[in-house]
Length: 272
Image (cartoon, rainbow, N blue to C red):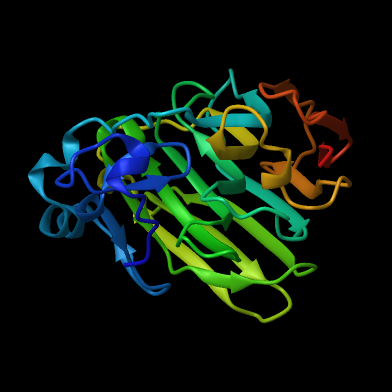
């Protein structure tokens, strides 16, 4: 298993409360994160066998001026039914110029219930700082923050300028979700395949999201962003094969954060 370990001092927790930061889910105990290989199919039996019973506890919140938030996002609800396929490609930006313990996530995802923290989400994630190292990784996740559990595919190291291709899809015959991410430069993949009953939440994923999620300081954080004000442009952003009219949202504004949409392109920008 690979994960970020934040010190109990930084989070205001006792030494017994060692926890892990996950995308969209705040803090989850180490033993409640299951990492599988690209070839595994995560079934309900496997989840029950490998995750402790206490993993149904809610995730903890961060403390001492640290904030986990969807700094920028685009989202859309399928009011007529459920999304079953979502594609998205993007180029890996430069590393942040500052490395002070922040975590920086960029992802496409299917979210259950609401486009907010804590609800179940399937997501291929470009992540910085997830292993307390100043590098990019690609990793496919299923996270249920309020349910206190997460399942991942393998973490793949990524370099600036690499192209990522991703998708999430549901196979109705097998009742199985696939979360897929590939580094086109190296050919390495992070694949998570999980049956619907293994989600543990009777989830319907009616929300699609594209997100820049940050964990770090509430103010004075601009140098913690990728050191490129051109930001990230997601291309081939198609839901069930179609370009859509996204609703955009910006929740942090100190660095000139903005989201722009044009056809199947979604652009996230900021100023360092």
